[in-house]
Image (cartoon, rainbow, N blue to C red; front, side, top):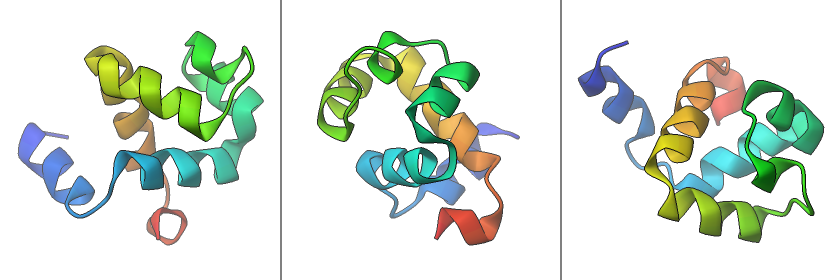
Length: 76
């Protein structure tokens, strides 16, 4: 997937929306199984994860990439 397609799929979607949908689909344990970052394993919450992801570009990119692989009906 090239960078342009990546941005198009995220157009109008906030990081909070991405994280909420991924959490709904996989849960915290499932997210940690897919992306090994501590904010998904140690006292996870949407708020603390958003704080970390906003400050950590490499982690945010991994989360956004995982979101891209959701089925279209799970992205809505």
